[in-house]
Length: 375
Ligand SMILES: Nc1ncnc2c1ncn2[C@@H]1O[C@H](COP(=O)(O)OP(=O)(O)O)[C@@H](O)[C@H]1O
Ligand SMILES: [Mg+2]
Image (cartoon, protein in one colour):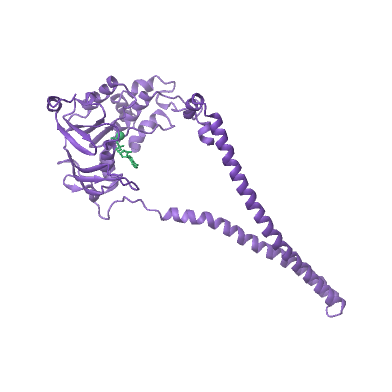
């Protein structure tokens, strides 16, 4: 609630929808609830603590009374009395120390269980031992063979018996309305998920056989919801291939390809400009400008396959067409995948695949699909 109430992103809607009272009420309810739980815990602690403290104090004085009594009756000398009373005091504080140490160990152990459980977590998708290096160059391309997929924890099949091929040196457009599984196909190619049934093959070999980092290296993807890093413009591009962060000429040429160079050179500190509003002196970009910066990451990457997953969703059809046209030019002779929900903006692709309800419903060139009534 506090993050929501204090965030810049939420401010517009919170104001216009008049959500102030709603948020405040919910915040108050939650903090009252947490306060009550704290009070009840403190009360339990007080009662248990008082009980134990009474037992401790009683034991302490009982020991004193016994020693004094034995001295008075002559069983102990005054010297022993002095010695024993010192010892009782010391023992009592040592015992207290032991208990408080034990209790703080018990406290910390609660966190430790979390930490150990965390260390034991393994990613569900890992490279096999003796995994193959990714092919370079790719000779036969990607093939989805009878692939079905559902997200973990969901019962609905997003892709069902999907078959498609992406061949080397071919620029393919994947078209489908929102929620048809376009992004999911990219996630399966890049092994962010594994199919439930069927196989994704790269050069005829199941992608599960390849070394994961190697596979990642060969595929450059800009997702629809790409990241806007609160870092400098230079770093925002360099994340596409962080090893080349210092190589300015590579970086600039990637920025020129994506048209981010013009945007960045207009900023007060150019490539060293801090982006985003979080830091002092940071400059925020518009949606379209951020997209150009993100796109430069893909061009910086020395990958064999480039994928643009509707990074243009915030652009109008005309600008989206321009982005794809430029992307097509720059990826000529390379393997590329353009993803869009608009048929019109991706017509320059060598082949178009139309996805509906998790299945391929059309597959052909722009001319062929136009003859079928698309476009
Ligand atoms: N992480 C996820 N967990 C569960 N369901 C998801 C997840 N991501 C996407 N979906 C569902 O899978 C379907 C396909 O999503 P997606 O591939 O993102 O579609 P597209 O990119 O074509 O718009 C949608 O119905 C969406 O709700
Ligand atoms: Mg998508």
